[in-house]
Length: 239
Image (cartoon, rainbow, N blue to C red; front, side, top):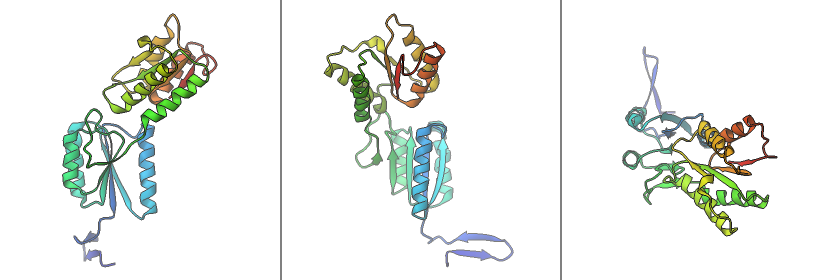
């Protein structure tokens, strides 16, 4: 009441400029919603907004150069309570968002290789601890020849699981076999499939595969089944 005004003959409702913003903007950068992680993140954010009586505006850009269109969209939309940003973003664009919006929250290690400024509020998973638990589980099953499928180790969300993989093997007195670590710039199911195929051709194949993400794990499972082997009876897979 008192926020909307109707213009006779136009049939248009226009909000007064002093209306309090009720929207949260969800910005996904360099990824898409087919990735289960980001789909679940968006679903959780929308659910929380609904519970608080807020609206969620979401958009995405598949490459850094299209961030300008996201910036224009947010400018045209009008004031928002804050931004939730996830995916992959460089520091320059993060600072632009922070200059334009008072409240910015990052979900995940959005900056990848770059150090996130201390002033930025972010929510991250403890990838190292989770990877350590995964390795403890596989080692507890008696596995000693465990392979690791990963990607760019300069990125924190791949580096931390790799470090946990190495630490857990060393703690059990098991030497780290570089032949069993497969890394690539790709992050999809296809790479997990190709990596598992390569590992299955080894003279002494692994008894378990520890994949950094579920896409790698699914690709590995497909390759194992194609080789007429069983999961987990012949090879255990953990993502």
